[in-house]
Image (cartoon, rainbow, N blue to C red; front, side, top):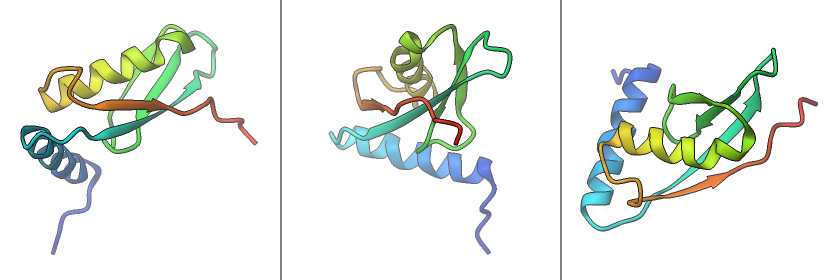
Length: 92
């Protein structure tokens, strides 16, 4: 039986994407964001890397923050992949 916990999904995604980058591919990651409940920070999540997220000070820092956390998670250079930032969820 395959472990489908968030940690296991993350480990599989990291291994897969490290391998893809080593083969010369350039994966694209989708970052989403939302303002924290108190309005003091922006929570950035990476769709393709479950449980990976970070807080940045404002929406202008979302792309750079996402790129940094992805590079650190994968242990690859920050220019080895693409990042697409989605708009803030509407909350509807």
